[in-house]
Amino acid sequence: MTGALAGKVAIITGAGSGIGRASAIRFAAEGAKVVLGDMAASVHDTAAMIGDAATAVQMDAGDEADVAAIVAKAIELHGHLDVAFANAGISGGMEGIFDNTVENFTSVLRVNLIGPWLMVKHAGKVMADARPMPEPAPVMMATLPANAPITLLLRRCLSRRRQ
Ligand SMILES: NC(=O)c1ccc[n+]([C@@H]2O[C@H](COP(=O)([O-])OP(=O)(O)OC[C@H]3O[C@@H](n4cnc5c(N)ncnc54)[C@H](O)[C@@H]3O)[C@@H](O)[C@H]2O)c1
Image (cartoon, rainbow, N blue to C red):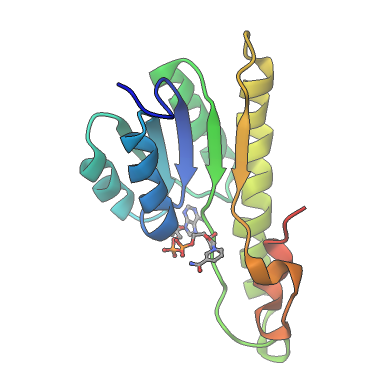
């Protein structure tokens, strides 16, 4: 297989739709093996669109055991890991802070902030321990308004701020 990502192995969360699905298709077209995570069953549809280069895992990106498991799956299948794209995310809805609840705010932080942190923890460890060490590529999905937060989308902005 030729392509810019030939020989690479990538985990992509939130691959059941949108940017994650499009990224998965593009990564595979460039020669990568992709291990796709999503809470939604549509992650299996994404894998079917790609074929043999893709494996689907239904998982919760905010759950440590699930994140550890998808990293372990990538290693079990392919022996190494080059890219971890922590893309799964939720907006939490459009209510402003006065109508928002702690439960809703916490759920957004869990997926958008703790989720990428878990991916760095588990995928980053595998990459850091690998010999020879790959050029590791943890990729965190962010959002443009996170750098200029607006009150209406405060929870999404706070949890998606690029460092
Ligand atoms: N679309 C945009 O304009 C935009 C802009 C900036 C950032 N983003 C971010 O990009 C990412 C993808 O956005 P999108 O537009 O493709 O959204 P989307 O809703 O189409 O895709 C998000 C996917 O994440 C999955 N998901 C949600 N919670 C999950 C969880 N706990 N575990 C596993 N999977 C989970 C959903 O099932 C869905 O398939 C999100 O993190 C979003 O915040 C999107």
